[in-house]
Amino acid sequence: MKMKRRDLLKGMAGGLALAALEGPQIARASSGHELSPDAVGILYDSTLCVGCNACMAACKQANDMPVESSSPEQFQDDPVDLSSKTLNIIKKYENGTAARKDEVENGYAFIKRQCLHCVDPACVTACPVTALDKDKLTGIVTYDPGRCIGCRYCMIACPYNIPKFEWDKAYSKIIKCQLCKHLIDEGGISACCSACPTGASLFGKVQDLREEAARRLLMVPGETYAFPVGSIDSGKSHEAVAAEYVQHLYGADELGGTQVMYLSAVPFEKLGLENFPQESFASRSRNLQTSIYKGMVLPAVGLAALAYFVKKHTDAEKQGEDSSKRGEQDA
Image 1 (cartoon, rainbow, N blue to C red):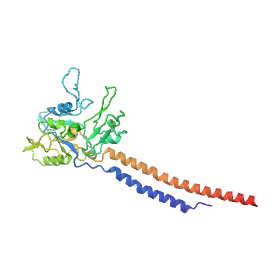
Image 2 (cartoon, rainbow, N blue to C red):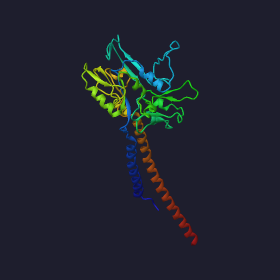
Image 3 (cartoon, rainbow, N blue to C red):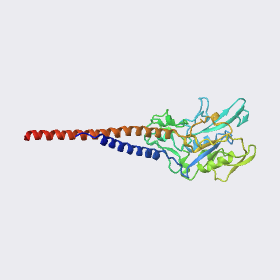
Image 4 (tube, rainbow, N blue to C red):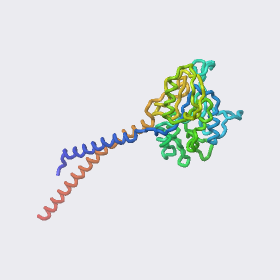
């Protein structure tokens, strides 16, 4: 019995069509990342920050973090960057004489460094044991040290260089801001926002913070406005003169968006915030994997169809040979 080419092509075409239909469904299922309406975050306004470091001190107290000195001669808490002992820090941009606040030339500005709690976090995607997870209600990127195996993939994956490792401990873990989730669960707000005297760090629901940022971007530079303090719905406010903002909310679009967002009068790249594309690295990774898997499925289906028809043809030939032998023996 000969294998018909029509049957082979029909089987392969059916398999390829099935694979083509399945591929886009996989892509669609893995690409959607929408924040809950109750997702919370922080709006940091560099123009309101006075560099008092009250946010850093409050963070350490709320999270039982140790004092960190930049040199053996220093006894006070003066870290130079994020570390396993410091979850957030205020850094300073300076140019020339640094005489004027929120100016690029001969000016200075402050910037707060902490976990941005990405909408589509690369660290969560990279973690092989789900030690890092994104809370479905609040959107906070949480860390479970009981699951962590110390691979540090999250440190490599994070585009903002946020997770830090306890290199000085025998049983080490990853350290990162969790937005004071333990305080939020008790009805409070992030400690850094609670301590900020000017409202530079403002806590609230992400949607409300985005609306507040839009309001500020429409302010007339030089005019005096009331700025919420603590949380956006606290009822407390601080009056300040509006600066000439860069007309962009950093974190609204970068890498799929973040829940910690920034306003500034100085270009963000001057403050160490990179100009990232809108698509998250995690999304790119998923799309690449889907493309690879689709590319593997199509040849596999074709090979399976070919193997099936070859086996069918071989079995038919064998059956024909057996019938011929029996006929000869009977004769």
